[in-house]
Image (cartoon, rainbow, N blue to C red; front, top):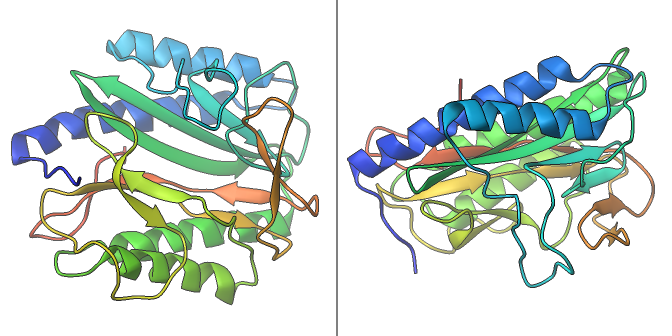
Length: 255
């Protein structure tokens, strides 16, 4: 069931979204060669705590997960696509890092992700990241009243495929509000003109995930969370929480 949010409720989600944006910015600033993923998670914890927010990631356990998620950010490096658990791995020159973060404030949730390189990034990685951001922008542009979920999916997938990248099968965005994952699902590929009709008051997390090698295949690590490319190529992930309004899409997780 899709829950429509009122204007005051969207403002509350915007407050949570600002905290997500600040957290991602702080983590990115801290991501230098030699810094561990656990250190980055601690940076995020401190930002959330200072803002009076909590993490919808910490302790989250969907049906597929063998254990609750133990951190406040997902930190996915190089061939890790999404859901990487922050650990003692120390960043190396040229690593491609994707950070996914959520914040809950006053009963409302925001969710966003960003990818970037550490140190001297490779041109091919920058192209991958820029394409993930372009796919996100295309999906957001399609998030207008009267369109359908399929229009967002088609916009995202068209950008990804045109650049020759793979799209992990079965993974995409979602509705968001009082809970991190609500209806409807938002695929990253599909035919336009299908699916739930977009109406003012809907709030969606749109999140392209790209695989550099062009395959859609992935595997899951033994931790039950981290998804990796099967071919060992790198991946990128971009995400914003977006409100559907009569004036067009409104990004709630922008700085």
